[in-house]
Amino acid sequence: MTQSDDFPVWRTPEGEPVSCIEKIKVLNENLAELRDLAQEALEDAVLMGADERQVREVLASIVSGLVNPYQK
Image (cartoon, rainbow, N blue to C red):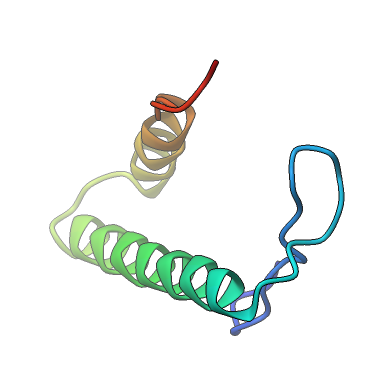
């Protein structure tokens, strides 16, 4: 994925592409919002003198710690 609006091919747990246009639209919108918010957080932190590497590590840690509430 790049910095532009390029999005992945969303896949089901079985590896098949998600085919519903509305679902793909929501997934892409959510990803764009997350990217924008993360970019703003990084920019703010760097402007306030925080270490960029640490901010990136914290953001990655947040993503790694997400919990799937629908897991069986």
